[in-house]
Image (cartoon, rainbow, N blue to C red):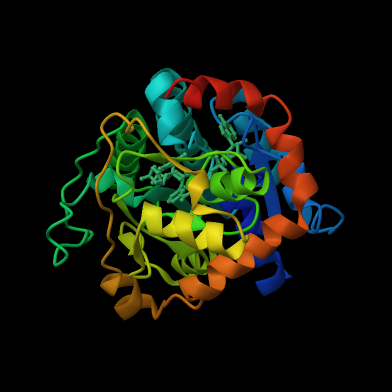
Length: 339
Ligand code: NAD
Ligand code: TYD
């Protein structure tokens, strides 16, 4: 099988490539990535010399460039991870989110129609469902929950999902969609909660907790997400949506405290800052469908996954120090100074 993995130099995409090339060494994997601020070829060092791996620096918004790659490579399966992925950035600059996440998805699906593929898989998010109240722990997102996005990021992902559904129904494109909860693990860009707190704590910098820290996210170890996607593209039913999540809900503040403790730092570093605009209160996935239909279950418990992740960041300081000492500093100042 020949796969094009878009956004394969980012956090989840690179974890997916590393996972799938081990699990299916006979497959050919093509990474198509524009290498935005979030894309990093360092993430793919362990596979770069594998003869079954190819990299193209290309933008999914560039129709001509994308078509050329499809024409040359004739892929069987496309997995679209490429996206602008950070809610805070979508609040300061929504435009690029619509361009990449919606129009980029359209270009990819047009390429799939033109050149013919066996499967187009859209990597979506539980954030398309909006949020759940904090005082209703009995409520979960199912695949039937109506789309109700809160941020420009989630609205752009929801729009892309609608377009994928339309391409399936109108043009018969063989599509699947997965909607996963928050991921954590190696290679996550340090603007997201867990790596940001690890890198700040290591530098004894304040740990900026939005609002009162009681917002809830449903955390899944990234490799479990990769395994779920692998199952969906091989065994999932065309036209279906699959929710992915491991019933691991945590308050933000509790995650920050776990990190502080694991690193032997003081809780005095925790600083409550102005809340995020439109901040979603709680995400919680009901993964019954993917469990019943495809036999997927998460394998990494949070208590183990978070320790593995913290250890990875301690063992790979160069990887994130290069990021936090570079251009990212300007972003950090803009987001957190005077907050
Ligand atoms: P990321 O920001 O770490 O990586 C995104 C990758 O896409 C980068 O390598 C970047 O260079 C590339 N990219 C961005 N714009 C592009 C463009 N125009 N053309 C080609 N490549 C482009 O994101 P991530 O956290 O790895 O998320 C991957 C996907 O999973 C996204 O679609 C996201 O919506 C979804 N998702 C993420 C999470 C999470 O917790 N991180 C949870 C559920 C779903
Ligand atoms: P994030 O990692 O940005 O993921 P998402 O917004 O997609 O869930 O944030 C996770 C949670 O952590 C979210 O409720 C916002 C909060 N948060 C902070 O409290 N401080 C921070 O510096 C960041 C980046 C996030």
